[in-house]
Image (tube, rainbow, N blue to C red; front, top):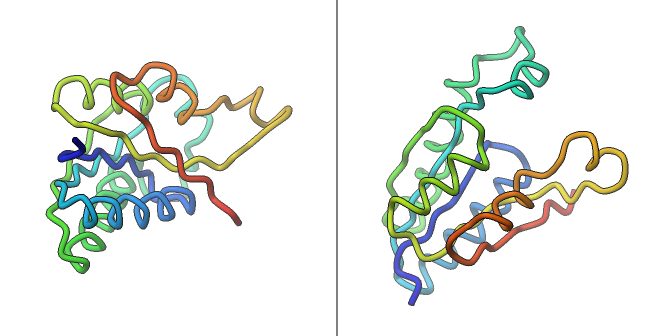
Length: 140
């Protein structure tokens, strides 16, 4: 039933927890793991960028590679892709065009004003995904 899993990662703590869960699930199901990271574009991206840090492209590549290396260590077949755009849109598009059976994504579990201001990538994915979505909350 679940042979191709899509793990969306941005390198955050929540994404690292989702990576752990995704690898365990892929191993248990003997499924392939597709690792996707999105170099964020769009109006919100400019607000989030800190020019003193590395650029979003480098961060996206590093996040995808870190997840793949973790999967490789656990003997899980993984492929990586890096896209540009609005993360939730790119993740849903990938799921629609790549015959994946489930999306795995981390969430920081924001609520209240913080959630209202920043919204939730995971929430948008759940709303629009063509397949089941496993959200993994960061417990920190």
